[in-house]
Length: 600
Ligand SMILES: Cc1cc2nc3c(=O)[nH]c(=O)nc-3n(C[C@H](O)[C@H](O)[C@H](O)COP(=O)(O)OP(=O)(O)OC[C@H]3O[C@@H](n4cnc5c(N)ncnc54)[C@H](O)[C@@H]3O)c2cc1C
Ligand code: FES
Ligand code: FES
Image 1 (cartoon, rainbow, N blue to C red):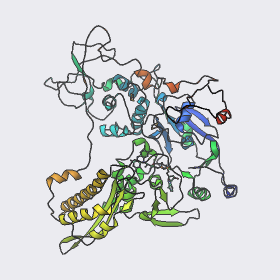
Image 2: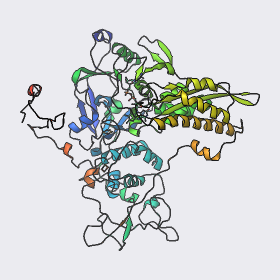
Image 3: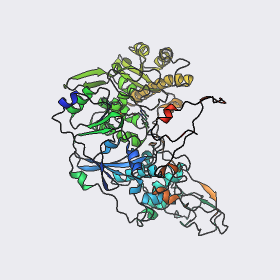
Image 4: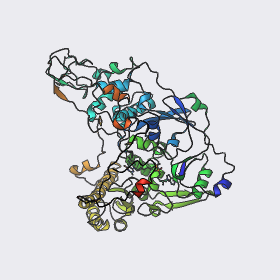
């Protein structure tokens, strides 16, 4: 797929044979919609909100908060099954979901005809306060449930929420409300479950505890006169869907049978949207419009498959990339972002580019004639966000930090393991990934031992320059990180060699924690609060009045309110200088703007 910014003369000749279509359709919550031409400039989020589905919210607008999460279902022709995944509607160009089924929070269930179990659970577990983030959380969870045949694990639930932010409720009630759908012991989540000895089992930790799970009915009344209670999750039986009378939306049969057509559509500002179906057509378009942006799709699954199929030695670099992806953005971004896009963004802080260079990766550049050129990763990046290829730019800001990719080959020479080849590459310290060439040269031929570590650190210190005024600041911290990464790498390699019985370098126990896999266990927390029975609702843990509106996307926020026809908009014109005396105002530009009413 490609989004292009100008029309070429050559195109008519080159693509005369290609039957471009402008017939675009989309299913939204089970309803078929024809997408008119002329919308190539808008996102899926804008479209959904324009057709009145304002449950999907606009938060950051750049993939960071997850408020705009929707579920997209597509038919995978090779696997012959429909696939479901969460995406950020604020980043998805509208036409990128052509021929797919989009489900928004309104498609799950609604206040009047019954909420979906995930919605009911979130409402009952007090998982929404202002409710702005709520539809996004629900859609991430719903996409996980739809894409799993068996109940997900608690880890999967937390991972699927990694791209969703909540700024006011806090994550405990949200995660607790979804945990009831995990494949764990349901009895742990049933209110007031007890051990054989009669102790109360904490639903959050699954262990006996004294927090006292008092029974609180959904109307807020209590079965005993507890003075303290905890805000625990509801039981699975409360949310098994017995009150849910809507049918789960199926994948539209029309989309199963429909063959994708090559698309050509337009948008405001001269934007053209192409969806070529064959690589040669894509390459031809790219040769006509070298600056055009490619929109491709997820490559994470491909890496996982490769790692699973091939030998460990053969795939150590792919493993490193795959491991790195765990710490990368949220699930919604990973579902659609491609490795090619990450490379071609040429960000100096890309988490992957230092690894490609350290792994001595070669990139294949294909032109429309089918000629393939191999380029070493280290020669691919030529400046700040510059490649040897022409490219369009991403608008998001950089976040300054340091990352690194390192690789070493050790050779046994007379019972000494010596460095025969090594790569040390840092990201985030220079406009392009920085190869610590002097340190690499220093290391080759040296015996891999503690002496090497101490000497290499000295060389590395001067080899990775970071000026005091380097963009991103925190210079001392980042400098120390560059050395720490090498230290960690040394420990990791030494430990691996020890495990394989190659040598017995004694590692200090205190240092070993540096190479332990950074595994975050599932969150657990509880909230204790006092219940005061005054004969009123005050002091009782009741489900708040807006909760069921928020979980169904029916709660209306200021920018969800439709503007009445002929609404007059007003904006304040601000002075660029404080305490300025206004002598005159040049309003010529304003007066010539369409719809100008007056300057007051
Ligand atoms: C919220 C968020 C969090 C992120 N977090 C991280 C992070 O933690 N670490 C990190 O490293 N990155 C991070 N990124 C960046 C992310 O990895 C890249 O934006 C993403 O991989 C780009 O992939 P894409 O398919 O969307 O590419 P696009 O944005 O669609 O494309 C990027 C550029 O590459 C070109 N291009 C794409 N594919 C090809 C190809 N096959 N051949 C030639 N040119 C191509 C396009 O034309 C375009 O110029 C984050 C991004 C977001 C939005
Ligand atoms: S609005 Fe924040 S991720 Fe889309
Ligand atoms: S931001 Fe999550 S409920 Fe307000």
